[in-house]
Length: 195
Image (cartoon, rainbow, N blue to C red; front, top):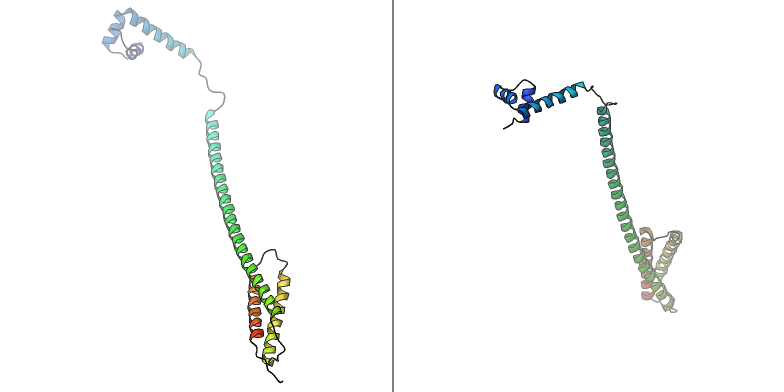
């Protein structure tokens, strides 16, 4: 049985025990292998020390720093993109809510405009008759008609807006209330005969 590579290297380096050295002395194959290992060692020793042309450590450190910086920038980019998406979503939701609110205002305003037109038609077709009305009733009618005139002027100024606003809706609501009161005054007034 022959020696292992570790035992042969120990013999080559004069670190082997007496038994391993005696085996190499009596075995031609093991002795030849020890000689081959000595020759390899001499050839390796004859080679000059070679160093890399540049210091690779500095390049490795620089590359690692660049990768860390790239990762930081990528994370920052994703954070900015996430914030931008959140901001865009918030604006979209706000815009949607505003559009819904404007549509609701437009619908309600349309209803008040239709009611206003119905009440005006009722006033036009009302039979006022030839009776006499009290000064208080006449004064009330004039006040209502004056207030309706002021509201009509405000509505004309607000008509240039693209969408009905709360203020415009409020004006139409007030106009309908005033027209309703005017209809009530004209249809329920007491006629005085003989004045």
